Amino acid sequence: MLVNLNRVIQSCRTNTDKRLKKKEKRNTTKIPKTNTESRTGSLGCIGWFIVILSGLFSFLLFPITIWFCLKIVQEYERAVIFRLGRITDRKPKGPGIFFILPCTDSFVKVDLRTVSFDIPPQEILTKDSVTVCVDGVVYFRVNDPIASVANVTNADFSTRLLAQTTLRNVLGTKNLAEVLSDREGIAHSMQSNLDEATDNWGIKVERVEIKDVKLPVQLQRAMAAEAEAAREARAKVIAAEGEMNASRALKEASLVIAESPSALQLRYLQTLNTIAAEKNSTIIFPLPIDVLSHFVRK
Image (tube, rainbow, N blue to C red; front, side):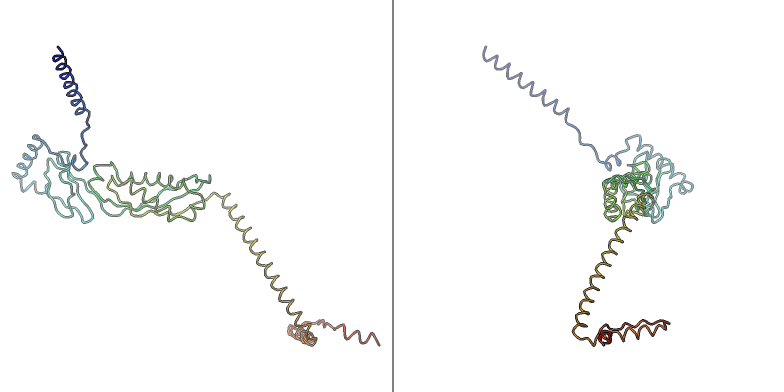
């Protein structure tokens, strides 16, 4: 009896282990295929049959179908070919001549040149609760034509919308002083954020620039008054320093004149010479008190 019980217990354990293993296999998630793998999947039997039939049709009507099979793209363009709705190759076609099947293939041209657009003026509330109006310009180009066609509906329009939101998000974390002084840092931060966000779309953001920062009229007046007050304060300090230096120079000159009384007479004569050169009708001549005291005693 005991042996039979042990066997029954072991069989129950093995059955439970098998059930657990089956559940684990069912619950394990399959590794998703990458975009390139899913894009270049097989067409299936019906798809290959249609492709072969289209090829035979093109071969039989060769003089006519050659004008439908032959396509040309420019040096700055690339062509992404779809065959029965699937991308045929991981690399785009071009530049130059390439062939397609007229009934099963379609293609989309992608421009690889750098595109620039203006960011519309955005009213942004800075970190220190000041409302400013900021605009900018963005330069970008298509880096991966297949991703720009397969991963996003309109890469150009999506990049424009993302640039506006990125400008608002970046400037919302800055003070007014940082917005006015650190434009290069803000532009670099915007470029890195845009480039990272548009990488899956096959877009390469080359450069971002902040064009203008417009302040409210009341804030401009307040800043102008503050700057004027600061300039007046600096002017008063400079004038006070000049008077202090002049008083020191006069003190030194008085000490020199006190040592030699004849120097004072020479200074009187020099002053008369300066007054006479201006052709004045009235000349005031300072008379030393020492001379008058001699006549008073008599």
